[in-house]
Image (cartoon, rainbow, N blue to C red; front, side):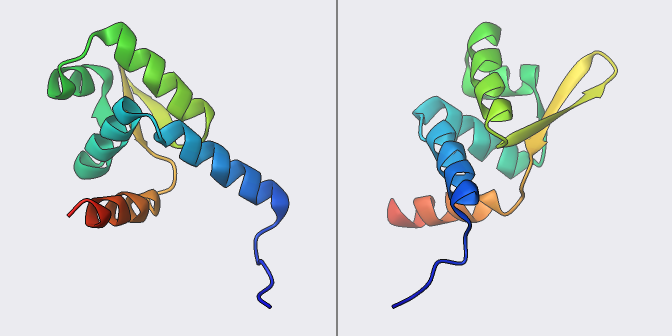
Length: 98
């Protein structure tokens, strides 16, 4: 029998991150940020053809659930993956859809 190497609290945190990414729009945002390395709200809005309020709402959820981090660059908020290894999950999802 295999013993889990993850502590239950870490499993809960991982599950919350995955739930946050499970929404199609948020998954698109994460994929875009993963591809570009980082994005501003306006870059996401333009690339995905979404309203600013919609983008901001989804970014807030992803940031709250530790999927993204936000840094200020002058007047812009720049979003990037908090854990770059999340790109592996996106690659696995892409492979499942091939």
